[in-house]
Length: 91
Image 1 (cartoon, one colour):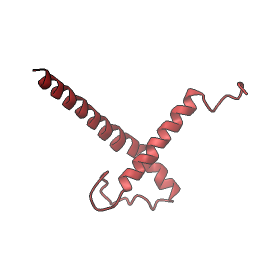
Image 2 (cartoon, one colour):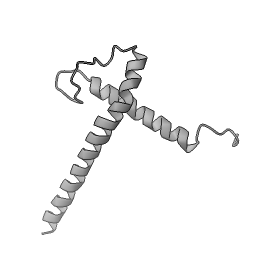
Image 3 (cartoon, rainbow, N blue to C red):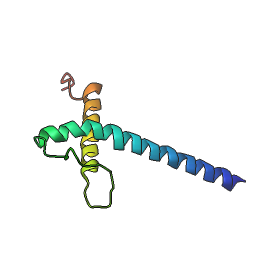
């Protein structure tokens, strides 16, 4: 009976991790990174007619790179908002 509860717990944690990764990284980070990629590449990347998947088995990783740029942007914004770069009074 203990193994059954442990398996249910592991499955529940995996499901939460999957949904967080899919929703946060695949959706939120993508839409934060998409306009930044468009601005940096002057509108060439990612293509507007392209269907974006994080792993579409075709060797193209446009969705991943836009999401990665978005994640880095969110992390940088959190650091700046936390005040780690704004104050030089400690020097």
